[in-house]
Length: 486
Image 1 (cartoon, rainbow, N blue to C red):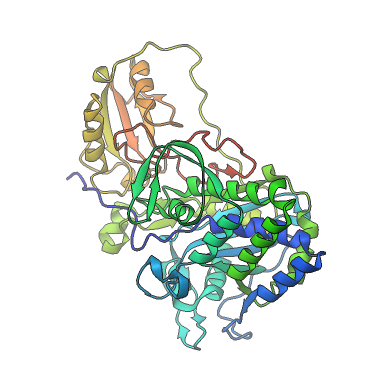
Image 2 (cartoon, rainbow, N blue to C red):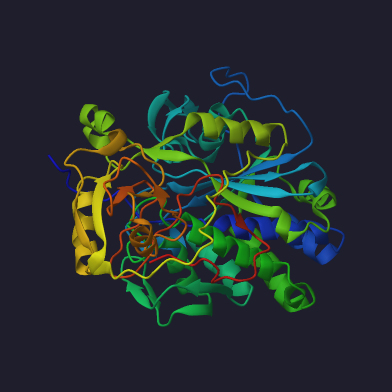
């Protein structure tokens, strides 16, 4: 029986992945200004340190060994509705739907931000919250560690999963995020189209490059239903591009050379941060020596390699639809590289593009069979409908799920004589190179939908799966480069 589609996202939409860019730029700027008394005093007086509620002799989780002089900082975005944040919804407690590990290499030669999708199913260790309540170890979504017992529990969870020693953590909330973006005078983005998202309180009036600030910036990094397929990871690359823009703006001469603007940024940043007890302004100043003169092209953002739950897993666990699981071999290779301060695993090379020009084929002449290689129920049927609306001769290739729903990337195969037709279909899936296959009938094309697939929704599109190889570089100035978010 063909599966029916269900959204891959769950729960609340409060994703502030742009926070990490604010924090990184704050570290780059504030720590380098530690020698100036006015900035030093502002930072020292405003930083709010949180006490660790866990017992120092608690051996339930063994802290990973520090292997080198690199620095690892855990960034958490708090969705608290307390105080000035109450305008964003009912006060339902505090969660962290954004968890990013910022790795600063020894010597300050490079930096990497690693995103942990909030729907990742992981083992969470025993933690004690600020009231003294002990929460037993459990298996659940990674963001629940913060909901159970706060940022120290999230830090213990990430350390236990990655075996990376985390030096410090930083927490920021909604209001703090907006204040810091406003203090920069706005941040540049590139919108794929004009759209509105009521849930994110966002209206983008035009496509292309533009400067946004305040509530618009907050909405931009929160939106998921208006762009992409509404899932937890479909927007991460776009959000990582936002991080890069913030870093570029915060470290630009226009900010650094304007005392009033710089002081406003420093104040907004430090007033909005809560850190672990050891992350003092003196520690920031020490960090400045490692980061002095870092090349923005050496700052990259990646996402932990992931997959959706398989059909078998969802059959055994009904609530796992849309949940994410890490690709352990690739994830552990990434974690090991960070722990040892090595270069991350190299990306797989994309297939070479055809050198000879192919004849144009009208969509109505493209006979394509569609297969669902994901755990998203009914995705193949939905795609057939969307392709048919675009005049393609599309039909289901199978009523069962391909590879048990574990296909990471969308694949286009073609039979003898079908190269031009496959190339025409490939225009709807940027980054996906058609491949010849003897298993496909002559003249036909086979489309296997992977976890990276974003619904067509009336325009050509499809984001690359947020895996290690899909790195976003902070030095990239062309915001609209490869902008395929729909």
